[in-house]
Length: 250
Ligand SMILES: *[C@@H]1O[C@H](CO)[C@@H](O)[C@H](O)[C@H]1NC(C)=O
Picture 1 (spheres, rainbow, N blue to C red):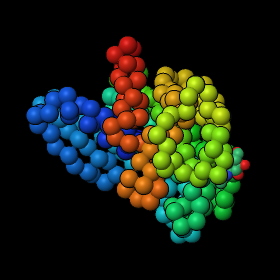
Picture 2 (tube, rainbow, N blue to C red):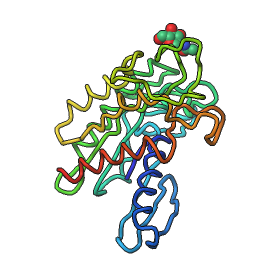
Picture 3 (cartoon, protein in one colour):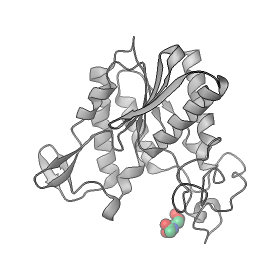
Picture 4 (cartoon, protein in one colour):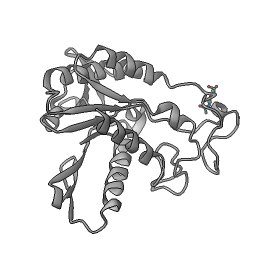
């Protein structure tokens, strides 16, 4: 089960396509129950699932409005007992204005109109880490965290100042170092992962994908200019191949 935002959906679609194209006549059923999308390989009793949970922690409607609860992770009840969990969150933490899906942030019973988003992200990750240590049975469940997936909206980061999208990018960045450096959220994520007692494997794809300014749908995606998601087939398939290698070697 993938758990996270539309980048997780990107990964889930890629994995379903990789599995299905290797057995094109196999029987399947595709459905959605609440926030969970399921692709079932009927001959194998295999569900490949996606739980859409953009913050991992809860967003709850209360009298005063929609509250992002950094200490609450009730949504985790859907994750219990799953064989393999692949988490991801980051892209929604910087949302503001009409696409921000909450009115208040709650920490320890206190409500805030806003706060530093990286600090909020870290607090939520610690809540998630506690959930892992409390709820994961390592004999049954393998857990991963999909690293921070980078976007390409600022050409200054790859030495093309003035370029504001990924449109027309046809080459990866050469070499192995991204001129714009690593996103600060990755440092926060690693810091939290080090505190977990159970094992969570980081799929550390950030640097790999920073180099792929040519890998986004741009105007050929579902809406407007998309330099956040990744084309299928393409970058997400590589993430899944790395995932596969972790699974077969551990
Ligand atoms: C692009 O990145 C540069 C360097 O980090 C920064 O100074 C600039 O404000 C950024 N541009 C936009 C539109 O965010």
